[in-house]
Amino acid sequence: MNNKTLPPDRPSVALACIGAWLVPGLGHALYGKPRTAIILLIVLTLMFACGLAFGGRVFPFGGPEPLVWLAAAAEWCLGAPRVVAAIAGWGAGDVVAATYEYGNTFLIVAGLLNTLAVLDVFDLGTGRKS
Image 1: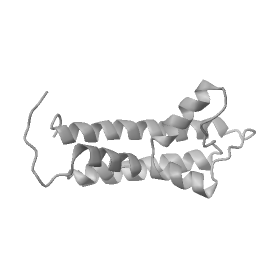
Image 2: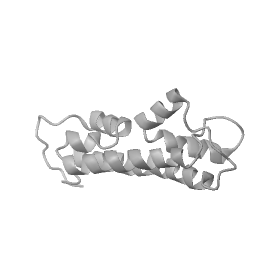
Image 3: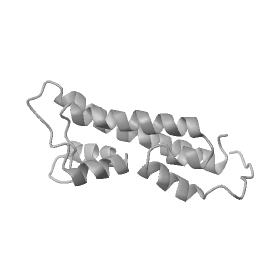
């Protein structure tokens, strides 16, 4: 583990990680990585939008199916785009669409990739990565 001293004007690791979860790329922007922040914001939001456009389902927490719970947890890892989709009523899922499974995959993977981005922000904040 690297014990680098971080400048005092940087936000706390917890605040940066919460920001990175809520808005893809925000944690990187807080730690001075604007290009990475913009790429994450655009790519992850577009992935989520493509998933919705392909007729993917925004999975709710509920029911006896463990895979549905895992899909819902993965989608909630994207933060604000998932909240906006829930409020707007998007993502009912079109099961008969040929692209339904692709849409689900895009929605789930966008959340999982944002989880990796949050972990990267944690590493930036703790000094493990520069």
